[in-house]
Length: 252
Image (tube, rainbow, N blue to C red):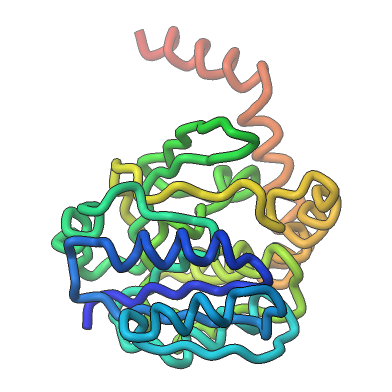
């Protein structure tokens, strides 16, 4: 099995139905589909039951949060690559997996672009051609458009359930710091991301900042982290542009 798609959900029946319909309408059918529900008390369980024949595995039971739910999905997944498409998120079009599947070879991560949908508006976000630490200090992989090689979870561990909203960020940092981990950009819109989710709640901005800093400190020393921050601040400053200009003049 090449691909497993994992959807987690808690009390978002409307979004869950939209996500399930997006996955099962794909023209590419060699997909294992896993739905993990956090014992919802809305109509989510009924929706899962109505699509039972289209879902490879599902359960509904209490959990501690996003990352315990995702870890449950990982434990059941048999695909070489995993895609996390949480309730409310949808794939870009019905042919996107058919297009992407032949591209999934041996890289650790294949990451694409996405459309952020929020407050009735849509914005297209394009990922960088090459992933580096400067980018990760300021942004992250967008999980609905990242195909993750399943063996990474075996080699480097599951999501850290001590995180509330940045566990995926910590996992990406943990892996990208390893010398054998590789990534490749697929310059296509993979999914439409529901901007109304927890990770995009403006009230949680401070928590996200704190957890992202915690992610770095779990994986590199304080000295290295402070050096990275200083380098990052410089590369994004006006002085960096001046230095670049001087270097170009010298080369000429």
